Length: 554
Image (cartoon, rainbow, N blue to C red; front, side):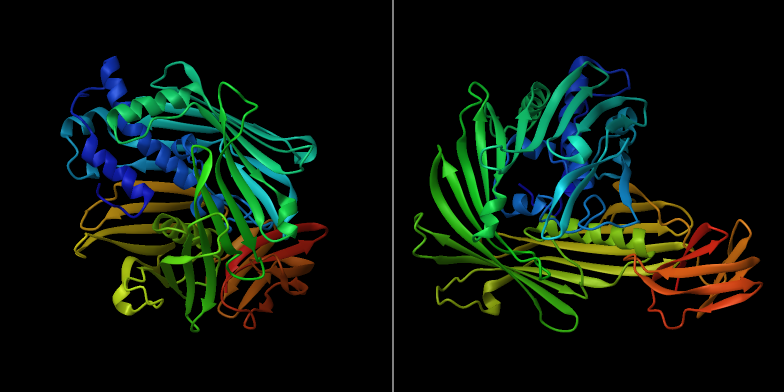
């Protein structure tokens, strides 16, 4: 199977390679509708996964691994959807457009039948968890409705998500998801509950796989026979917070037979050692995998983050395997090396997919909160001790991914061009290159951020994601904005405030800290900003008890 380096491009390439020619018009037979569902639904679910963190198909067969651990809110670095600290700025997905006509090899008849595919997100609600872990709050912003439509007027799918929480946002947190396909009847999709066990005090996340998802899995499996059968199981993840006080945080995955809700079948264990004082909050993850409810494999992933140079931050993940549960022996299996140049913020990197997602999340967050993106590179290498001497030489390393972000400012658009190169290797060592360009654009005069996915050599984007943010209101040098009777004009090195009586002001940075304050009065009052570091700020002017604020760029 052809390897691709991001789940988004995987989904889009799926369309290109697998659309049949059965649907020729918008007036479709039932058989044609099913065929379209087989082909479109994996794309839809991948887009939902990328933009909301809801891995619907992945939840049908969860696995306890490093990717899963780092997806949990407590371990996840700040993104547009998850926040580890309060912030007055926000960014969230609005919609994704898949440009079907731009996909290489797509049949013209399918283009005429579908047009473009749009995935829209509406009715957002914030789910708050009633506790902090290591001063990190747990908060997830979740859409209430996900609509999937064709530009030809076809309703492909509608997912409705309802959530509730206990008193004052406490436990239990419950989420129910339903889906309707092609305008048909509504089917239950997933049920999720997050609560605390009254006996053990462990936090438990239970997941019920409902009939709608089972039917979709069967449908997609008919199209992709390599998919495994879906077991008659629901699932439960247990997080023992008390265990963190001893050594490492225990996390366990269980399968719950649909015929016997009282039985727990062990499917995986993890012990997560945490250290939130460093750039990498996870020190190590000890993993145990099961087969037929018996432990059969043991491994330990060691995470190390080091500032190698003034520009290069290097994350090393060493994988050791053991032969038995006692773990008295260990064998070095492989190493992942992630070199991030000018990468100063947290990264959640456990695979090439998570690396891409981490970079895109950072770019979108920077554009939304700062009005610009930083330049940086990411290099991911894999290494194995081929000769067994305990050392890794350059000859035993292979580049698996290169990512480079190039920022620019064109008119009122802040732009970040992301070039992604992924390498796969044959048994003989021959490398195959897959290249994708991602262009993120934030218009500084409105609240829209657009992310285009452009395969190398393609004249057009195959897909575009749209985010809304509160970046609107940023003004630059020589621009001015009038709020009520107060006129604020940023210039090089300062700000002019006109038409005010005696007013107080304070300047706040993007972290919410006040960096300057004072009073002004009358026309042409001047506030120097030459001492401020370059970046985006908010000036708050208060007159007669009324406060007004304006974002500006220093």
